[in-house]
Length: 352
Image 1 (spheres, rainbow, N blue to C red):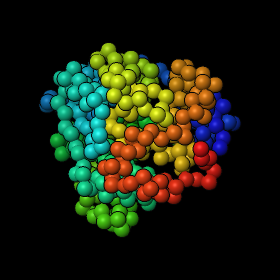
Image 2 (cartoon, one colour):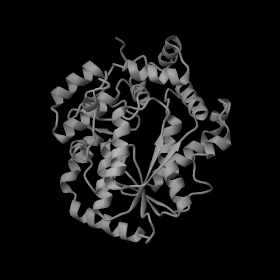
Image 3 (cartoon, rainbow, N blue to C red):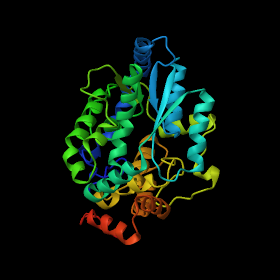
């Protein structure tokens, strides 16, 4: 495994680009100093004006209630947009902090909210299938997080959907930045449909797959965009903004001191979800700790040496509460969980 000489991120992330020992995420971050952010903000203003419709809602914004959700709503309302929020939620145990943050976000900004909850039987079947056959437990709902907002936008005749960061650009699997999320949405829809035959082998019907997809072909009735093109994407800044509006982390509620993490404010909404993020470790030799630490280094909030120490110490650790919550919902005992985990453990990844 090669690690970026600037931020410590590994080259085992699928699709990541490395050049001369430096990951593309760092190279892309370096480009920020050459961006005219005022010009991009004006571009966002013009785009927003195109989609003002005089109705109750100008746009749909997917939110979880996390710090990035606060930043998105803060930024959109600063522009004068009237958003409808949508949350694609999961049936794992939700934290007090997560419940507070979503409710507080909506009430603070006076935003109406639409919640999409996949029925528990379908969620359980798709999660077990993806965990056992792909080593990617929440594959189905992660499709839905992108497809449901555009499906709703089309149904309500709302022309604009605002997503957060362009993850391919921000985290190093593409070199060109863009605001246009439509090609990625189309790719997700096509990939989901292309997997129908595999899902069918696990008892998931084509009708159930289509239940999370916009009907028919993509016809540009909806423009999906990435806010990270118009405003520098920053965990540090977003947390500061969120706290001003009443955001709470797990330290504030004192409910859960997580293991295998280096913070208490990222991905804190539901417990079982964290296990999905850890599953990158047995497959690729890194998990959320590497993700977060490398971002902190790029933003100047952590040194490379500090990041390396945290990664070495905590990347292998799976939080036991998250694993139990995932197992309990899906119906696995401890032995069955490890049987599947071991199936996906790469020979190149060390074990404790």
